[in-house]
Image (cartoon, helix red, strand yellow):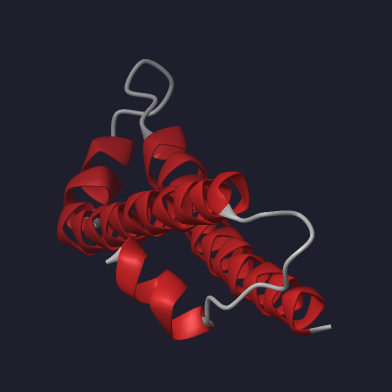
Length: 115
């Protein structure tokens, strides 16, 4: 029973991490879409020469948006690295854990191994 509870806790930990990654990815995608549609799509100097002024005017604003998107991508990278460490720790525990004996490893021990 304890082993089942431990696996459920580990499952919840990984599920939470995947949810965090999904949220950060959605935010990064929104930032990228804003850059593409709101900024780069305006640049059509052959059709409308005055559009260059709009692009120059919005340069600083969209630079900030690009940096926000970069922050979300960095967050995603770190969460994926953390998730990979947790999955490896769980895999190692399952390999080293006898199938017939209940697990004596706690969630804190798993998190400590992942750090």
